[in-house]
Amino acid sequence: MTARLRQSLPAYLFLLPWFIGIVGLTIGPMVLSLYYSFTDYALLNTPEWTGLHNYSALFQDPRYLHSLRVTFIYVGVSVPLEMAFALAVAVLLNRGLKGLAVYRALYYVPSLLGGSVAIALLWQQIFGSDGLLNDVLGLFGIHGRGWISEPGTALWTLIVLRVWQFGAPMVIFLAGLRQIPDDVLEAAEVDGAGRWQRFWRVTLPLLSPVVFFNLVLQIIGAFQAFTPAFVISGGKGGPSDSTLFYTLYLYQQAFGNFRMGYAAAMAWVLLLIIAVFTGLNFVLGRTWVFYGDEGVRR
Amino acid sequence: MKRVLAHAGLSAGALIMLYPLLWMVSASLRENTEIFQHPGLIPEHPTLGNYALGWSSTGTNFGVYIMNSLIICAAVVIGNVITCSLTAYAFARMTFVGRKALFAVMLATIMLPGHVTLIAQYSIFRNLNWIDTFWPMIVPSFLATDAFFVFLMVQFIRSLPVELDDAARIDGCGYWGIYRRIILPLLSPALVTTAIFSFIWTWNNFFSQLIYLSTRTRLTVPVALRGFLDATGSSQWGALFAMSVVTLVPVVVVFVVFQRRILAGMAHTGLK
Image (cartoon, rainbow over all chains, first blue to last red; front, side, top):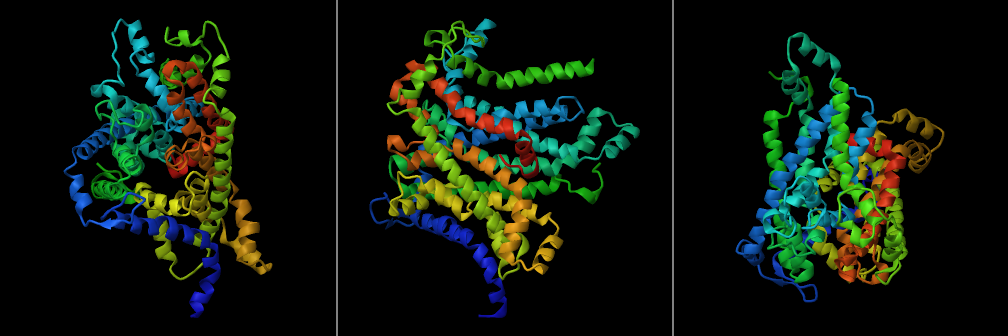
């Protein structure tokens, strides 16, 4: 054993639990699930090699393609909306008002509870045909509908649920806004920049790394959303598959039909999709994310 | 004047945000026939009957589910605090062969979607005969698998002065002594943050508890709550809401007590 390796031993001892975890619960299972994705595997049989069959079957499976579409709509609509709310409220809160801490806490509460089954059940009631939303609309003489039971609107109730949880990115925006030095904004004001100009030309560029960070995290998280769709649709992704999220379909295939190989292939495609989106974010990010010492962009 | 307007706007916004939650609490205090009659918050005939009904109406006392959830949460908190801090200390303060590469691997796992390991993990746990036990939820936390907390602690340890380690070493401390007597006490803010988020996330975690647990008396709060509808039909909205409120209480209490720490933890690290 070389001297360097011997010196490394104490560190390896500290890392032992992590090492067992990364090999036994992350890398090992990744390799194993990659293997499963090329097999026909129903949990009780020995996996049977079928090559690329699962992958080619995926793209001929109308329900799979539909779940992709549903997920893309969900991510594409809810993330920008959530980010816009988070940023707008953070900017409003960052104006030295008294009670900032209270507002921040109140707006954050939905983020904390939103992923729970209890909230999904509540949502099911709020957007039901005799639910809270229709009661409120009734006060204004508007005749509501069964928001959750109709295929045209069910997905939108889930989008609303996600947007409702804008408090988490908002808190991160607030922290970012605090890092912006007052004198930069004051200098811009002296130079004659109005409120909007200061926001677009000074605040937003200086905040762009935080926007970027939030965007990457939210997209990754939204692709993996599961609980609300599962609970609200009773595990089915209905009505008419309108809330059949990617992860929900994966769950159905794995634990409903025991098509483990097929589900493993789905998981790898999901990893690929998330990797592509994250990579795309980083590439596009270079054009708009602004890091520190380049001087304020004009 | 502008200030008043801003406060009015922000308060109205907060009310809209919180209305569904307040309404749920109110609905849990109403009789079933009254729940759907008006969108207001004040129950006409307040009753705690829904709580009594919900507590026992699935055949198993709801306290059993709460206890199961608490056992899993406590184990996960302990596991994360111990093994993530060991791992973080090694990455932040020790030199060893392969450190950069291993650190990169650790960071990469933060972004890895759990679904990629899901099927294989399930089949591994099944071969270990761990299906329908708490082990699949607990064991990973004793193996520092939540890289996010490791990263959080690495960042925190790096902000502590190295001179403390040097002084302890001169006084005869080895790596273990430095970790135990210097780093761990100073790390406590990060440990508390880790403990809080471990608790909340595990309490709310639905997916793994759904796929791994099946025996009624071993179910946890989220799984039991979701089974409530099937067991009772939707005729018992009041009882359902009462139990929903019960499952949210621990999270709200933790939030109220540790509010500053939770919001600061969010702000620093982007935890969700």
